[in-house]
Every structure is written in C-alpha cells, then in structure tokens.
Image (tube, rainbow, N blue to C red):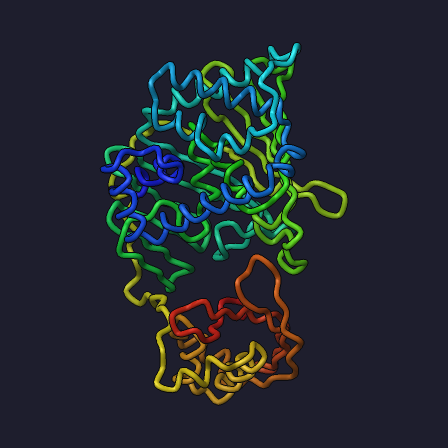
Length: 441
C-alpha cells in the first residue's frame, strides 16, 4: 500500500468502515510508515477531542449553518458520482459527524448562496478526481534555508514551488531558496543550503513540515484537509463564504485561525502553525477548482500578507527527472543520535548544562565532544567560526510551545572578536534521550 492510498483510508479505518482485507493493509502500512502513523495519530486525537468536548468550541467558532450545508450537499454530490472514498471522508465518518453535531438539518431560508457554495465544492472534488499532476507556486515571507513553514514578517517575499504527480505513482518536489525536498516514489531526500542532507529510505506523503503546502495542493479537498489539520491542533477557526456581485466568476472561502493559547510568545508568528491568520481561498465558479489563496498574519492590530498563490497549473507534463534530487559530493548527512558508552551522563544534563557543555567543547575545538550534541558534522568553516569561542553569559532556559524542547539564551564572543546573541534550541526526543542542538547558532 502506498502512502497516498493509506491517507485516503485513515478516516474510514478509524471508523471501522473498511473490510477486513483493506483494514489489514492499512494496519500493516501504519506499522511500517512513521509519516502515515503520525497522520493516523492526528486523526485519532481530533476525533477524541471533538467527541470529548461535545464539539462546543467547534460549534461556537464555525459558521455552522454554512459548513453543515456545504459538507452535506457535497456528500450528496459525491455519492451521486459514486466516489466512495471521498464520501466517507466528507460525508458520514465519525469525524465529519463530530464537526456537524448540534448543527441544524434545516436549510436557511436564505440558503441559496450556501447551496451554490456546496455545489461548487462538490464539482471541485469531481473536477480534481482524475488529476495527474499539479504545479503550485507561492510567494512567501520566509527566511532562505529555514523550515518550509517558517515566517519572517519583515522579510521580502521569496518563491516556494511544488511539483506533484498523483498518477501512476505519487511523486513530488518542493523548493524554496536554500532548501529543497523531493520524493521520487522510492525515497525522500532534503538538501539544506549546499551541503546538509536528510534521507528517508521510503516514500513519504508530507514530511519535513511540508504538510501545509501538500494540503494546499490537494485541490479536491483543500478545505476539508485544512479544517481537519487546524482542528487537530486545537486552534479556533471561523469559516465564512462570500460571493461578490462584481466578481461572479469566483467564489471565496475565508478561514480565520486563532492559534492555541499554548503557543509560546517566542514562536508566535514564526511559523504558519503559530500565527493568527486570515486565509482567503478563491475557487473558479464554473469548475470549482482552486484558483488562488492568500494568507494574512494578524499582528499588532494589523494584517500582513505572508503567503500568496501566484501560479497554479493542472495536468502539466512532468518528467520523472523533475522528482530526482542530485546531492552534492560533499553533502553532510543528518544522523540520528545514538546511545554512547557514557550516555547516562548526558541524559542527566539540564538544558543549561547541555548548552554550557556544548559551547565549552566548541571553545576547546573538541569536535569529538561537540559531535555528541549535534546531528551533523561541522564543516571546516563552521569549526573555524566556532572554535575558540568564549561564553559571555547564558540566560535562563525557557520553553515555547509547540517546539518539543528548550531554548537557552546565550551571548558568546567568537574567535574573531564578534559577539553573537541568540537562543540555542535543544531537544532530546531522540533514541539517545540526550540534548542535541536543533537550531539557534
């Protein structure tokens, strides 16, 4: 079973709607694929949260009458076209039912607009059901080489592109300045800058924080995937639908997302998932296909455009070579931290002690010791820069959700006399259970 097939069946699998053979195939794939297993866990968490909470927060935040009408009408249209897999996803699964609990079954007297919206989205499913490829180009305020979902509200726009093939084999590539990832149907690789590489010896659907872009490219179910991902994160969301009289060829869906209160101040507005946003999706009124989208970040009482689709093409010809990523000869591969003979000593370190030990090793140019706190080998230029450094001071470690680790404020003097101040990111959710550096240098 392929990842795409597994993802399509996660909801019916969770709802026990698959036959024994299909369920066994999904179960076997989940046991062998960490990416799909994570997707399944998110699906479970969403279902449990909605059912346990009685859907109060969803009912308060969603434009429930509109969503009820759209999802139900869409399900009818999908059934009419005998698209069973998507019927389960959009129509009668426990998750969809949980989203609709408490919503009125009666149509509003002024419901003609919502019926039109539902029909448009239903046609989008049908129109996109046989897509072979999708090309998506966005402009995004982000730092080159940083994570694909990184935001920098003060940075200029840079291009973020996705090439995706659905048939006959799922393949994709995503590229932004300084970072590119590709899945050729057999393995998944990522290159950061010109020399740091990560490789997974299996095909994956949406690794390396690329999920938001893959959901945006899922033109047949972009809204459902978007709403599910947001709800699974525990965020508040309000959805409205607009039809402009002066723009009869388009239909707009506006999703307003308020991040969880757990989001730490340090990471607020640093990533798409940690920002309060207003997301505007534009669909073609005739075909129902997604035509464009804009994401606005809300900060300091104003809105800043942080993401915009500037080009979206369907069924363009893509060569298989498009999904190959040639790695440099001097690439330095990411390595998973393994247990050391004296690993227990490092396991007991606090974040402050780990930061102190790491910087001290750099100061001594003890690269064997430094390697115990890193997931890559430092290049000659990095060693020259960090070797001989002096710690001026370390601040009090702090956490900022959703980062699964700690930040340690530091001020150091480099060997050339320059002073650097930042926050060292440390995490220990690895097989060795010891702190390793995850950013901030």
